[in-house]
Image (cartoon, rainbow, N blue to C red; front, side, top):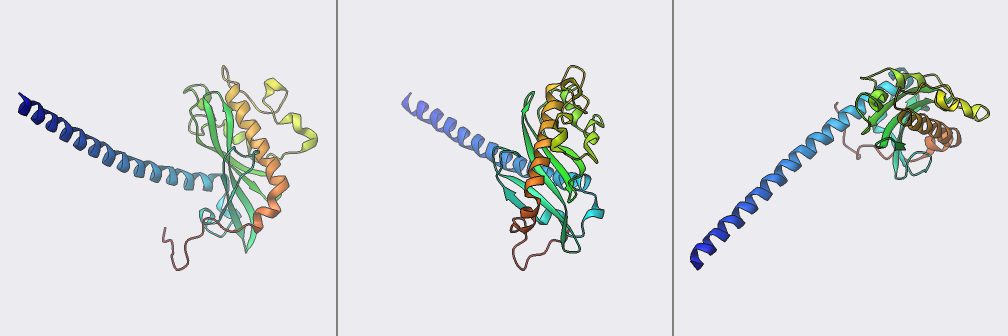
Length: 215
């Protein structure tokens, strides 16, 4: 009886070890694929928010890390587009913490005249059919920021129409667009105050010396 119990216990322990190993391998493989997909999405979005005519460097290889409550509660990234060696545009990652279902991560493209070149959503958990209209694949609402400028004297315009501003809300979903509008406004406020210093910060995305990128 004792031998049978020991044998069964050993088999169960072995099965548990193998199962854990398989789950770990699957997780690592899935994690790698997710990271690759996220990187591919980011590269595509950078081109959408900062048109290639605004830079002649490799945008995704010139960035700085900053920590400012206007952008996010944690460290965030700003990509720098240069033309003929001079800063000409930036793509700033930011987070709207007050979406209906949590954080909404966005990227805002801005030129050195502080015009919005484009805004795109990196990640969100908003309700399909309602809040997900912030995605370009679902509606063109996100393009309403293009060519806009933030003027502190006209701060009230940076709200949804329900709150007296210029931006449409969604039927049955005001919280989501309200959160995105506020986040874009804060990003523009940050850019107004920090654009000159952004240009002088050390590059946090440069490849190690001697390495090249063939992509």
